[in-house]
Length: 431
Image 1 (cartoon, rainbow, N blue to C red):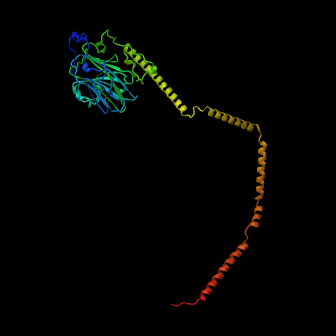
Image 2: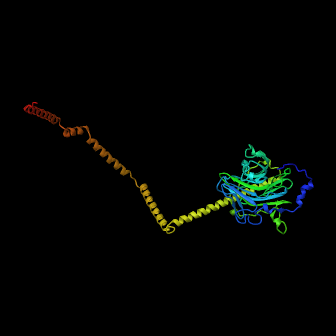
Image 3: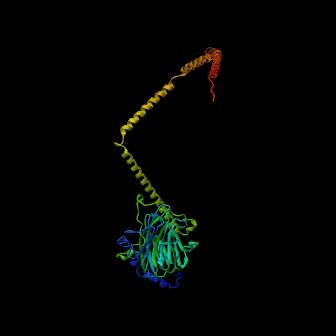
């Protein structure tokens, strides 16, 4: 890897733009036919993975699936790029849960075997260029560029962020559409995303004979990284696959296709906050305002989608309840219940009027007088004289009790004397 100022004359730097753009078929896929002719591999590319199998579909390659987590996937070109002047266009999409995470790396490396499925955080010493797309720093997403000549071990480096030579913010998750990454070595190195320049440098020179690669890695809550196309061009201006077709060239920037709000897919990623001092010119101010209005539109579209889903679920639940009732909707039972409730209301109203209309004072006074009479009779019956007379009349007599005790003692003494006499008159036994 060489990083040096441009020392060639100006005419030499501008000379490549005069040549036609040529697409390298051996290093490109997804720009004219299906990504894979048989669904098992991509011509000119090698596929590797860890903890899952990379899915190769007709229109995309899923490097990491939505499940499981802690998965890795990689695509590496079988042949190196033989030109120092090239342009690459990558169409990618990232989707997942609200708290999903992961990273995607664009590589131009001398030794692809030393990287394999590693990310920028797990790779050791490599020789080449790495462009990283992740949510580092909590900014909502962004690109960072790294260069290494084989002397830096990124895995053991204490401050990896300090090695980045360029970066830009880009909220890439759950956009509902593919994002377009363009990397060009015309007059240095230029990295752009969705037709907006991310960062560039005219002091970087990348040699030929290096390999292109894409690697993706996810954590416990994964993101799905999809690659829709990878187009490598050599020669003139930025790569446009439509240049291979006949007819007038299409405009460089196509108008975005409008979508109905009720068909907008997915939940959009929030636009990161920016300080007012960071906006220096009108273009940045317009871009920031455009992004925030677009994000607001996405949020409104997401609200409409949520309301539509909620309404559909309520209708389905209502139909399930109606279907679970035997014989359809029981209107006759509800009417009968309504009549019973009305009858109970009339009865309660009649009782309330009777209670409020009659005077129960006389009844209460008669009841009080009857209670007083009962209490007076009980008091008179339980007087001290009556209780004493009752005790004398119906109480036990002590004389009879004493006579019974004396009779028992006399009988006991007589029985004992009789026992002694009989024992004394018995014959004696001698041994």
